[in-house]
Length: 260
Length: 313
Image 1 (cartoon, each protein chain N blue to C red):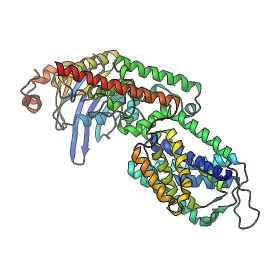
Image 2 (image 1 turned 180 degrees about the vertical axis):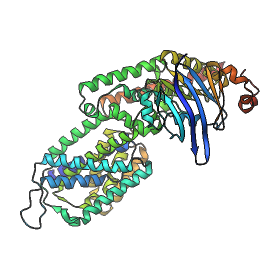
Image 3 (image 1 turned 90 degrees about the vertical axis):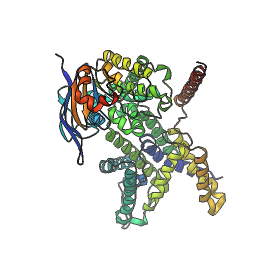
């Protein structure tokens, strides 16, 4: 029996009178790939924003590796090892690919501002380490030959990939991917699926992914949570979920059950 | 031309440069606009003068502590930094334009307080500040200011500030304590402005609240934008050009400032990203420009190849 790295209990978020997320509970297994699916406006991204501290939780609990993280500042949650990508890509657009990753590596160095200003030995030593780490990550992820390209000049698919590399630079234990395959053709989606599985194994982390591409979700997720109107509709393995009548009706039913 | 005149212009440019460098960190690298940094200059100028002006001997004259210049510089910078910490605590949670307006309020409030509090001479000003600023002191402070800033910007702390400018939300998710880095940028910029104020006071030998009006704040911000946001060399060039320009235009007499404005507009139209446009005139900066150009060309070639092969199939 493996452990749950992320446990969500009774999570609720209200915007005024609207409950965007209402009493949702689920957990993510350590080392697993879990999927979060549901029609548009079901509250998937809101849940990501709640986990990462971008929104304040109205009520409920979010526990990461046994530690309560709701109401922590986003950067502290990132510090603990939870990071994410965005539905609409948010790179540091005017910086080079290398600098995007180098910036995110910052937590691997501990030198202080006076040490930086005076260029003391620790600054030089740790800067070199950071640069090596960024270069290494880019090599593993196949972006090394584009290191000097300005991020917003990258082709779309690679921008998504760069966002994942930037997230990996934080040495996360839990990676949240918000529609990583949005706007990708079947070929690219296929590549992305392999990439996600590869990342999970190579960096030994857990993944929670929001996605609309059913092939991707059914192909790589071991566990799927289905949301509708801010509430959990169903939960289980891909096989269980795809035959669940409630899910069929709310989500897959309309597209003719292609997922099976 | 007279040597002291040229020296005067150089010193003014050098003093402006210190304040501009601080603002360059805040505006150019961290993305926060300020229209109140003359307020920090004023704090620096008055506290600096308080340190160095000899104790009062006659009734009616305003006395200070009579300490050496270095104490004036340190105290002026520190005072501005401390005040900026308080200001930051209150205002840094404000978004974009609102922060900008808050700084404007701070700058004007500082000037009006100095205007109305008679301890330092009020609106009449404070004469008799010792003339300690020399071309050498200004130059030395400039060099230190540039080096410190360049080192800071090239460190992980500087990169975190740039991340805040580029994409605040992504910076947060990448583990950057956005508030803290905004605060650091504000404090550093205020210390720089404070030091500039001290040097300014000890160059003019007379300080008056009027000198630190919103016009001064705006001038500093214009120089940063003119030089190019996110470029230290741009700020240096901007400070030199825009301080010297009004002097070069003296021939136009009363039309001088009109031509000054026109010149700034022309340059901004021809170089919309400022003189340096975020690039640096340093060995590393030039390497970077060339690497980026190569990368861009390679990308274009690849796209062209793909288009060609796609057309054939």
